[in-house]
Picture: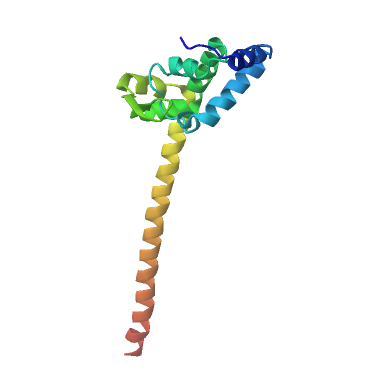
Length: 156
């Protein structure tokens, strides 16, 4: 355990006089402002809860856990888990991987399913538009060539 300074103790006391909602909002603002892994919704390292509690001794650990749980339930975070890949600690360093089981659980969330389906539909539309644009240009080129050739054949 770390030795608590007088200033740290005063801050902790001042924070604890606030409502739980205000404390939770304050913790969330602090976390999203300080830690890039939260801002970018990267998959979090296992055990990051203990790192957060150690990094913010002025806050009640139960409230830190509440903020962390809220973050981990957000569709954007679940989508990141569903994609899989690396997990990151508070310093944005690689610390483990998302398992296929964790990916599957995250992908089963109804909101995440909907987001992934919409994303796949947008990609398919973009591909179709890209292909259609290429066909349109090719058709226009053929038509222009026919128009150029047509006067030559009628002039003969």
